[in-house]
Length: 322
Image 1 (spheres, rainbow, N blue to C red):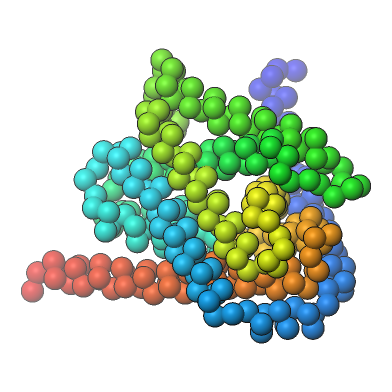
Image 2: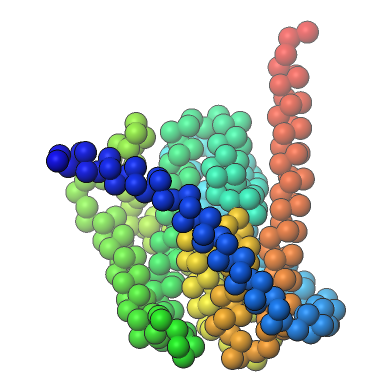
């Protein structure tokens, strides 16, 4: 049997089993979330939510704004990468709108579809839009690798007793993530081949300076996300611990492909921190985080998007000959 035929057979088998396995996985999640909900003291959740101080909510909102601005700067790197003269006033709204839709409605809607629509209105070609998108993804996940690698390998996060993934194994994962991020930097500095063509789109390795900026901005954004959660969770929790749990939950969210990681974030935080704080106080903080970091920015981004569309329509009307 040829290798090509074997590969086709494996691909067919994967497609055949993918749907039932996905359904089974979602059913398992529903069961787990139902069991978790029964173990929550909901009176404590509502009491904690009502006790939030306005100053705390303002701090969380300010950190959220900083995080969105940092994420939008990913696209400023992309502007330099494609070498197209776009103003930062044009770039930042696209990044903010895309991020808000990405968080709530999946990467396909926010990260891809929204970017293609908004950048095409700015006269950016599809090939360059794909480059900006690719660089943004690289910035986010290589920044994640650098930060998660440092946090996990340092031993700041300890897994609860009885978990299959031990604290030592988590440190090993951290070392691998550090090596992966260092490998990216080494490739940007020493690789002789700088360009590849994938489906007609040319991919170029950035300079070492740009790659270092990617890792710094990506790590900063994840750190700010953790700072928002840390502000809203019980005061006795340490920031490095909250950061580590967020980084673990991010992987769970990617694996499940649930928009906004709905329920996954909460399940991971409660599972890993319930020996540090009550389940009710943890869930209350995470509900507030959802409202401030996900829902509120989505409403603002929706208004921004409608304003961009209205402006574009007005420009089309002006250009139409009488």
